[in-house]
Length: 87
Image (cartoon, rainbow, N blue to C red; front, side, top):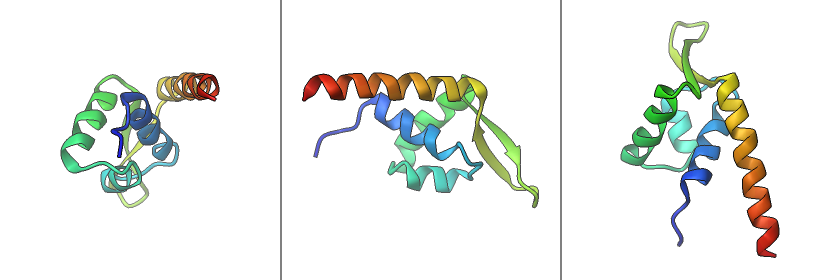
């Protein structure tokens, strides 16, 4: 099994956060272990691609920002370009 690239992992995390989600859900949906998840997640949070908010019950959830949505679109386009050149 081949390791996923930074691009693939970042896309996975950002896609999950399109709908506000808690950290556990993001980690599982991104298919990452705790250590790798924290490395990527906190980097995206620190750089403003994801933001922390509260749900209706006052629990912390995380959602993609406008800046994160722009990054997601660029990464998807780049991934599509690379995939189409491999065929």
